[in-house]
Image (cartoon, rainbow, N blue to C red):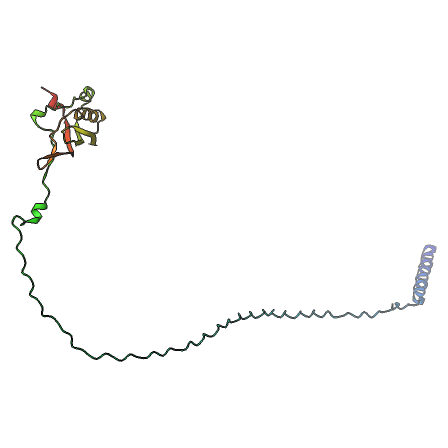
Length: 219
């Protein structure tokens, strides 16, 4: 029974304390918030910078006109007055009678066929052929025989008026130097029948071939 009474008293005190606390909080004055001073800030609106005016084009100075050179006036030369001579009186011209043209003279005897008289005599070329000349055949090189070298050597010979060779050269090779040398050696010692113009012996260039054939060397 005492315990219940003590609990009731305790609850009464707790409730009273809570009521006092709530009253104390209610008495506290509510202080309004302080209003701080406001400063007016003027914001300057940024205006776009004016664009600079376009530069005026520079005017080029006009080219100076070239001064015209005045040519001095030509002096007036006085015209010479020439007096016209009177035309001579027309006179009759005297013409002598024309003489008859002379008859053409007959050509002298033996002068007919002048072109044939001026025609040069025919030239007979030289030759190396003929048994009386006794021109020996070129010696066949032994090595060319072994190698089976054959061919023709074209020779160009300047034959003098005495029938002797003045110059000897190979006009066209046989393709084998040994055969060419053998032909040169032989032809330098040959004799020729000289070329003739009419009955006169003359120098003349003679071209002929020297033949090297292995069959001709065989007996």
